[in-house]
Length: 352
Image (tube, rainbow, N blue to C red):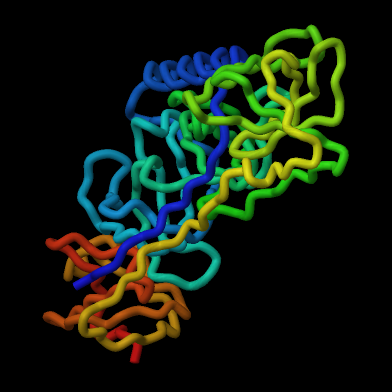
């Protein structure tokens, strides 16, 4: 019996809408339509070099299947930490499955299958431009994959404190990870002054008296903090860093200046570390370490194609032995087999 609970993370900031981002969205949708027109028999996926890795919790109840569509369940995730490698991400991630292996760089009980990309949290590893030179999705923030092309991914950020608006950006696969990093802090000069939005909406410009490049639309009562060291022609050069990084200009009349010397850290929302569920077995069976790789099957049948393997050096729980087959579980208990299946290895190959 498994017991435990997870601790979700919660980054935060403002909301945004940008015409360039909307134009790119329609292009991505057109790409998805073209893929469908090409035929469902060979759906487009990311190239072999595009692999997202990390150790993190997978949504409790999420399933791993043995086929890109249809197929049977070969593993259920518990909400505990799982080492993972995500690849072969479909051109339209919300409507397909990606390939997932429950192994990263260290030895593990590796099960190879397919999963809905939305069941796996994806994080940025660096700032990704939404509006070049002015607006970025910040590093170490959770995003949703919405499209793929070759070895690049298009991601969507749900901006905290907004009216459900999003910002989208594209980058190469190395700009994303399955494990959250540490958010970078923006160094604020001692001479900087803080500014807050006067209302829930503010237009951002590329220069004083220039073009509107972004519109932040916050929920009523939610304050967006900026800082600045420069003002010109009734405009203020605004900087901020949260789930979005902003370097743009705003009208002074739309802003409320903080008193000089007033602490700004109090306006920066805290972040919470992402942790997995803490799980344990009521009566823990023996734990052993594999000295060599051992194929794993979903059923007790030599004709059954292996669904993965116990990698050399991995630690596993030994459960029951039935008719020459031993059922095992990963030590971290990040996944379990479905009720009608198991993670079976030949009893003759069971580590001692």
